[in-house]
Length: 165
Image 1 (cartoon, rainbow, N blue to C red):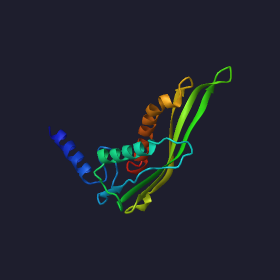
Image 2: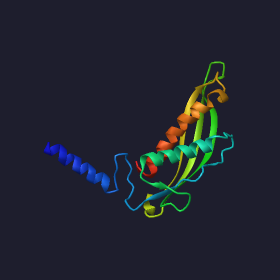
Image 3: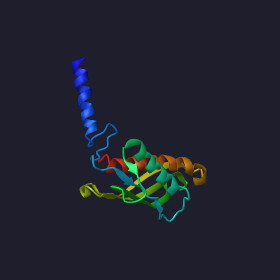
Image 4: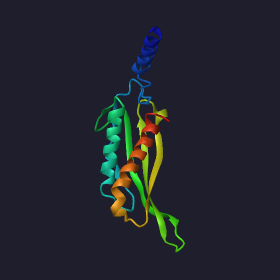
């Protein structure tokens, strides 16, 4: 009983100090706000809903897994993203030299600025992909593929910025 109480007190102490939380974030206690502006779309191939879906997914992830207040401008943290790549390429070819599998790849350039702790800044691109059967059109599978790709990219961005993995 004493041991359980001691473990519980230690866990509460660690989560209360603001440096570590059980969601895996390592945000300093004096960092209170984050700005996540709309994700710009700069890829050549167009997906009209991707910027909006990615913006909403990022905002939701930070809202659910951090204590940070989201503000429109001048947050302690700023996460600026742009879609720089949206490409479909064949990944495997049949004996008849026709595509058997295609791959949709999305690339997002991220500039993460920590105004209080600049050593935590991140300037990096993240990519994720999903394969689909070449007998299907991109239009038929695009929404599902993008949903999965967005989940992967958002997780990678979150881990690289506030989880610092």
